[in-house]
Image (tube, rainbow, N blue to C red; front, side, top):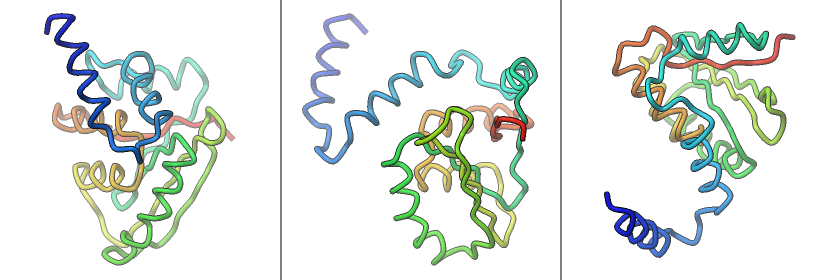
Length: 158
């Protein structure tokens, strides 16, 4: 895309952005895309090496768990609004909420269901529950590429 066209598309996107979208949330998504994630070849090996280098614990979801990566208070509010809908269609056995390794307002939420789900269902549900959109998009790419661990949390060791 030529530079002028990119600017025009960005201007159009701004004009069509609903007022309810929080500018901070858009900035966080942009930051994730440009610097927080390796977009060239997303894979769990990179995350495992980071955990080893930084002394972090790797937490994998059980076959009946969601791992929701909350990046803002707004996303946390979305999680609670959507929780009642999740509970209407799934039996929720447990919900654990911990601050992420970055600290509040970022959180890691683990929801345990009464039934197993596959990785694609997990990614879809996590996204709907307010999880980091960029993380979930890359998890989808990893699952599509047959990564053995497309979903995991990196946490401080207790």
